[in-house]
Image 1 (cartoon, helix red, strand yellow):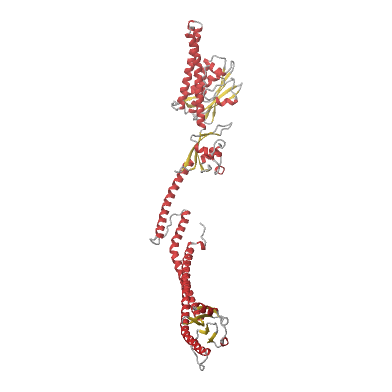
Image 2: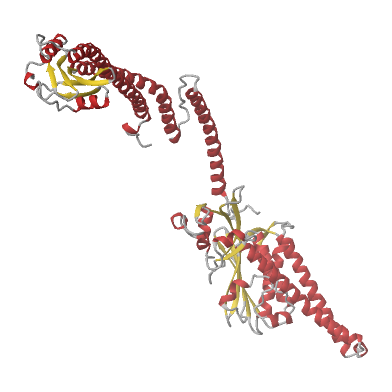
Length: 607
């Protein structure tokens, strides 16, 4: 988690806000106090000057309105004496001015030359014209002190007979104000310092639990749920800390459950034989198991974040929106000329309760064997139907002819009955062979094994065919020189040899030769039966053990074959834990090989 900057810290912000609020409050209070103090001090000073002016006003009015004798002093002299009596440290100068704006007297020694001159002070003129006291505070040009100038009209009854002008030194008031403001500033600084300290401690009571919760959140993000937030009290922060600890416990339980489910899901996905692919809401692959990678022959880096339609090779047929609507499974054909490979994709949609689609789950199943089985089943049914229909059609034709009167013909009737009998026997052989294969497919048979000397057993089968053969075919034997004792089911193996030797005789020309051989290879004996027949094309050699396969269908049917003999032989050899195969060259003949398990025995064990 990124570290919080100093000035972005909630601790600093809280202290700053707290201090700023106190500072603003103090400024407002200080400004109000300073303004009121300034106004009150000035008013008090002005009132004291006005009170003294009232006393002077009475004396000045008496001197101005007094009727004088020749022996009396002049008004200027009398007024000068009166004004001199009222001078003090805070009064700089007092002037008496008549209503014609002429200066009658002044208390200032330096300004005696102005007596008798016209006054130019605006406050004097306004006091006379407005009949009200005029005041103004100015700065003296020489002393640079504050001076209060007052002009008070002098009334004689209702008539203004002049004005009393006073310059008072108000600098002491301003110095008092400055001193008081200095005291206020120092007090504010001390208060602010105390406020900051108190604010820091108050902020810590809020930020300490928050810092603990932040550290706990970082620990939870790294997977550590053992740490708990310290509860400092029962207030809202304490309740929040308790709730946070409860949340930690719930998250720990949820993570344990989720991790357990994740491991289960991962184990299921890893051990599934079917492939599983998950996509996001845009149809891009987000999860795929190993089985799906093997089925698609891809690697994880080539699959993740790619569109699912592209991965499955169906982008030209389906869009992601169309895949969401698909209800049935989709066949995927990856077959090549050399090998058949068919998958089947089952698609399900994952969505929220609101219906919002989160993605798709695609399950891939290898359907190659099933398709092969279905194809073989269809082919089997078709072949059985064809093999039964041919003799039934022949029998029906001959029976219809007999029913129409051919039975009366002594030359034709026996031939027709013979054909019908042969076709009936052929169908019986076909049905018996089918029953044998059915029992083998369902494993409903048991091998009755016994130890026999294989050369003697093989010779007995060969001699039976040699004595009963109707065509001019030679038999050639090349058997093993020593006795070979094997554990076999003699009835089942007799059927195998009968089917192979019968085929060799069927396809051998007159004057041909059928060769028999037995050799030992490791823990197996290998049996060989070879003929000089027409052979089998190389591309079809491996198919001769398929059911109903015939190299020459016309000749096979003519000789009564069902096309199941070698298929039965393969099943019986496989049941004996052996193997069977063929080698053939077209026009030169075919050789059938099969092996049987064989255990070497010490001399004298069979005595």
